[in-house]
Amino acid sequence: MGLVGAEVRIPLGQPWREGKRPYGRSALSTTAACLKGFYLRQASLGVNGEFGGQLGRTRLPTRADRRRSFRGHAKTVVPVNPLAPRGPHRRHPKMLPEGARDRLLGEVRTARDRLVVTWLADGGLRIGELCGLHLVDLHLREDAGCGQCLSPHVHVCHRPGNPNRAQAKTKHPWREEDGTMTGGLIKRVSPAMVHTYFDYVTCEYPRGASGHGMLLIQHHGRGRGQPWAPVAARRMLARAGRRAGLGPVKPHAFRHSFASAVLDAANGNLVIARDAGGWASTSVVDEIYAHVDAHDPAFDAALRAVWGVQ
Image (cartoon, rainbow, N blue to C red; front, side, top):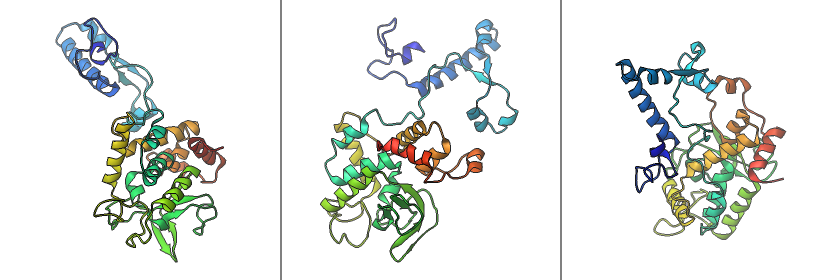
């Protein structure tokens, strides 16, 4: 276990996977499970039974263990693997590296691309949600006409017929009446998001962009002025990540980092994190407590802490 996962030089001088990175935590956990099964099988055959007995440890189940179990209420103990790696778990192994946002903003080359990085980082949007936004969905001033949120916000609407095939995952009902959007998934907008929007619209957004009314458009090629597809946004972020020395950056990494940042700022309040990112409830507890008020001081303070706004 030390040889396959160590960053340091062990007895053989280097990890056995020469030229490759050591195993990560997930791979080490899987390897440990295989090793435990092998040694328990050997113990059942009479080989090194004492060591097999040492592997048969248990612990009390956590809440996560109970939720994963079909009959979690009846489970009193769960097995422990002494061979598995120890230490704190990351909330998600695919979060952005520290300082990735600023490094990406230093590498992207257009106002549209700066908008993409900022909106993914501050809004926790999925790439399909971002590329599927229409201009009418944006209510970037206080006391907007929809009357559904006093602060600047956007309405994320599921539209299967978008010309760039971008779709929001959530399917909340929505309606456009007299140029005012209501319904959909309402997501708060940071001051930085508003700033990058106006920078993009005043500097790069073409006038009369084919009448499609979508937010993100292509700048070059035969599709100039047409809606920008999610695959193009993914490629842009991958190129910017390589230039910044981060490797290919995936859009969903912003969402994982946003969730982690909101949880930290909200002191672990899952309801605030769920509503800030627009996640569906996955537990009975969340359903009982329902949705947090978008104007709740704790909700507002958590988002402002993530955005870096006083």
